[in-house]
Amino acid sequence: MGKRTVVIVDDSQFLIKQIVNFFEKELGFEVMATGTDGNAAVELYRKNKPDLITLDITMPNKDGMQAMQEILTEFPDARVMMISAVRGDAMLECMNMGAKGYVEKPLKFSDADFVSDFKTTVEEVFGEAEAAGDAA
Image (cartoon, rainbow, N blue to C red; front, side, top):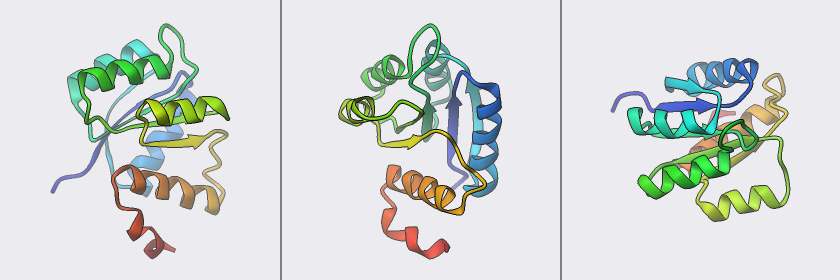
């Protein structure tokens, strides 16, 4: 089996760099593409069909929830993970709409607990949470 693939979409280039770095170095994913708005998210998913797409909620042109809805309508088996500062009801709504995981910003990659939780969330997205305790 080859590397898992991911498309990362966030309206902050700074955060995209951090998320790309995390997925490549910590998780061993191949980052296929990055985008900065919901329209790009839908197009990049169509073009690349990655194993996972990460979406911010608050983005220009089309927000992450609209993009997720469009992706899941066209590709019901898509794995969508939200990475957003939006909390509370929006998080529940995303999960109810079909998001497989949710990571809250700020992204504290220097915090070992945050990194562990982020990894666990990705494992849960792929249905592998039972293996999460081994990496400590």
